[in-house]
Length: 169
Image (tube, rainbow, N blue to C red):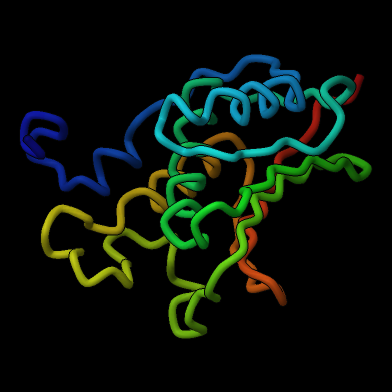
């Protein structure tokens, strides 16, 4: 399957070679929709907290949706059953910040700066189909849109913070 998707390139080379088609996106409305529809991807109890208007970014909606799906899937995997995943949105002078927060265990310090690298996973089943691709894909897509992502250990869990340039309006 990997050969069919990427030809002779490695999976990481194939993902990095993908192009993104950017358009103007009303980020809050987009994220509210992601939270509302996350259950269709098997991710229950996702809550959006932030403005739904006024924050415009240039992004590829498909790549941004895929990015959010990978981050939410990771949050779901590590949260205690029944707890919410919160997507919040704030804006600074020229940057919008998306924070995806889940309660649960911290990311080991030895992995915190490496989890967005291809093949990095702390799951024991990583040799059986989980190759540490999800967060790598998320970081790669965001980079192509001029955005960046970082993980943070918080007192009550973990947050993934995406900073994406806003369109001046």
